[in-house]
Image 1 (tube, rainbow, N blue to C red):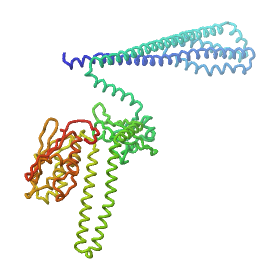
Image 2: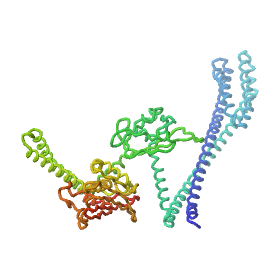
Image 3: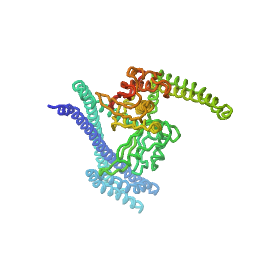
Length: 597
């Protein structure tokens, strides 16, 4: 079995557990949904049963009130005793209507009501007839009452109403019992499902733990899964804004409202740029909105680093965010969603970390500060001397004569040499404290061409021809450092030229994990015994007939050494020179701080 098959098999337990967990969640959710539907139905039926019970009692009470009014009238013959009877006649039709409406869903109760209705009607007819007979002044009304028919009708009405009430009471009890049983089942199901989910979580943790111990090659994938899970969980507290295809706000969650200062009601319909203005942390210039970019590109877009949200009240908040288009089933973009979070604390921690890192480089910075300070302090009097010499030449030049003007020239020449010496010393000091940076590849060919442009005046003055085995390779050195080394060596080749116009060639040869670059010229050359001394500070082989401080090659040595390379020269007097320096090839690596080598 190959490694790929083993990798797939290792995921079977986790997949099965996840599937089972989803089934449990669906089962609990379905059970809850069914219980909610049944409960809702039972509540409706329960209310109907209680209403039927209540209305049945009300009907019986109303008919009883009508009989009470009839008897009072029969005994006294006074119309005022018929008030309960009249009130009952006006209420009974409404009671019947509500009873029939509430019992529509219960066929047996509807049947009982249909059987009750003619009895009530007969009772009301009996009451009406006795009242009419009494109003006519006849004593037959009493005989009708004494016949017992009215009592029999009233007893039947009472019995049928009680039957309706008993059935309703049984149904109410049944509904309550069913509801209690359903609730109990839901509670048991939810508890059992939660216990299963907890067991599955434990099983997942055990499986993942064992997988880490057994299969080291899954570490990266597991780490990525953990980070994804952490991101997903933390996103619950993130701010979320969604828009339509025109980037108009359609939704904001409470976190987004709090961070932006806009309520959802106020923001709805506004362009995302109004609600979510973002600027660069350093320059405070506006930054392109990632949501608009996601809509334009049709793909997720992340925000640039060091970005701040300007809230409605003017408060600036460091944020991190991402945006993605929202597509429908047909793949058409119907809007976009923006998720962002407040990283002010994180950004503060990053700045604190930067400050701590800066403290580690304090010694190198102090060296640079000293170099700059010393350079400034030395330049100030030189500038004064130069200015006075120029002022003397301008105001008193004719009066000073040839010898005086010659002395002023000596002063200017000395000031120039001293200024160049200060510049070279500063370059040497900075080279002694540079940071090695091999995280990004640099084209030696580009550095060579840049150096040529900087030396174009010297090249033209010397009539030099400079060629290279183009293109020169990619090296893992900061571009400014390659340019500085190239410019120093090419500048020396132009300076120490012979009678013939300079012919300079640059080439490169790969040796292991580094490139060796050579610069060959046809200049005056030097004695081979000085091949090592020329890279030491202030070591000059040709006196003062050539300009220079004797620091340039020492600076090159410092730079090359920082990157783990070396520099050397081969020459003979009158036969030109060849300078070699090695630099690491362009491979991914980590930037490290380096001092003198």
